[in-house]
Image 1: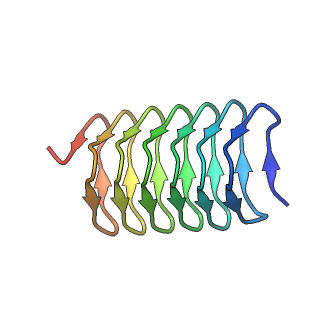
Image 2: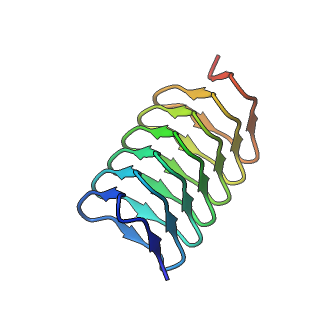
Length: 120
């Protein structure tokens, strides 16, 4: 069963599996699709038309732009900014305080170290 904090704000046409957790003060745009066992932590902001694959974890204070596609098992650590139109492959880990620029494509099983920008 989905666990959605009452303070979370979801846009229109957000599709999600039953096994999802959305914590407090999360903001989600329109037309998003979230796979199985997705976790979105406190104060994350997710734009419109974002797809999160199964078992993605979005930690607190993450900001994701519009039109992004994430594969499965992606972890975005706290206080990271993901630009618009970003495509992220399966198994990617983006460590805290990192930045992914607009329209970037990250290959499967990539790790972006804390505080770094991709592409450089």
